[in-house]
Length: 143
Image 1 (cartoon, one colour):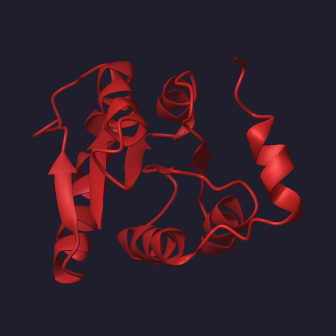
Image 2: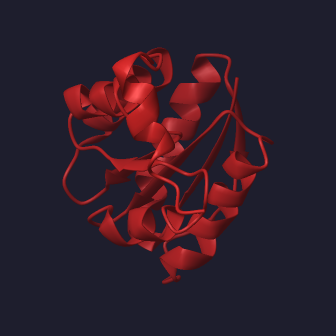
Image 3: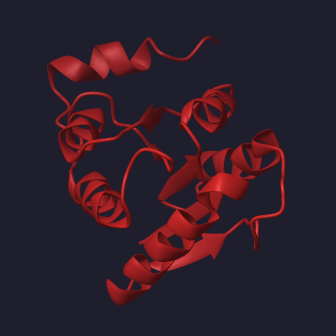
């Protein structure tokens, strides 16, 4: 498995914690930045991760910003991207089961490192349920 990851300046510490966690799970990571907490614009990083997921260069993406909202909105502008803003592991699980989410977005200002790891683990381990959800997921994209 390979995961693309990025954040804005408020999510750098969480991003690094998740990179360390993923490496401990033998998961490859493509880090799109930023490298430090100097102020940056979240769209620049969201678009890089979304394109990486869309092109199937990676299996999933993970994004962080302060609330998770801005970076999530940017990722969801891309066709074939279903980015889910998750602050509990149950939400991450349902985003995979029912929505086949392919990017996990988390609010760095509102969750701990421990919670971020639990949410990430749930997201990457949960498989899409399919069935009655396939038709709904297929209606998400605007063609």
